[in-house]
Image (cartoon, rainbow, N blue to C red; front, top):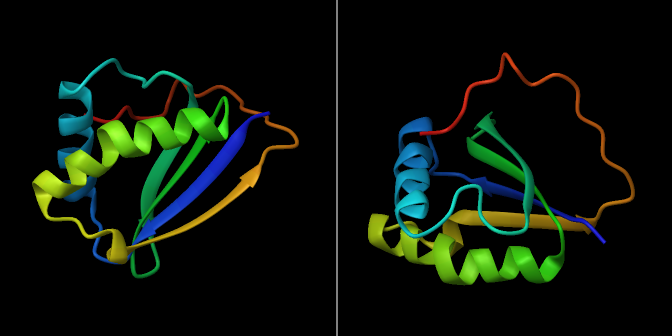
Length: 103
């Protein structure tokens, strides 16, 4: 079952997001194995990233093996990030040809 994570970093910014993405990309394949979809942007009081994964396990593997090490390199504290998550019931996406790509 697909799994969605919404992460909000109250100290986040576009610049920090790009730095994290660069480090994650340097650590392995992009998109990461098990990733289905990601959208990121400014949110009230920081930066929000919404990701959809093939499974909870795929997301946790990515978080532990690639995301958290990138955060550690950049001094991002897990205490700065709040998480919410849920099992995905349905998913829909339209034409994303006009969307920008990270990095």
